[in-house]
Image (cartoon, rainbow, N blue to C red):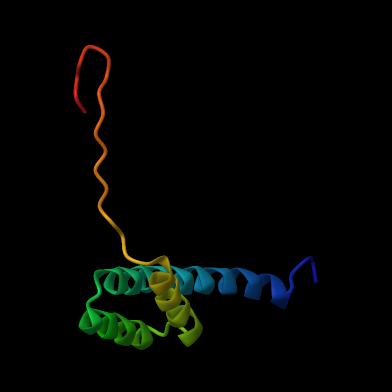
Length: 89
């Protein structure tokens, strides 16, 4: 057999397929999280339907939605202060 095996070939093919699948899942998860954070329900539905069409699993989609909803809304914060020499920041 000289070191050849079916698993050796399968392992590299699977790694390549998994990398493509994970990249798509990451991209669509980010889109879903952004839509949820914006509070736009229409955009959330659109992002979820596009993710489903691309073959992203329901588990990944659900996790992206839950993470976004659990984070709460982002708030803008303004810090003011002074530096040496009377410089206001």
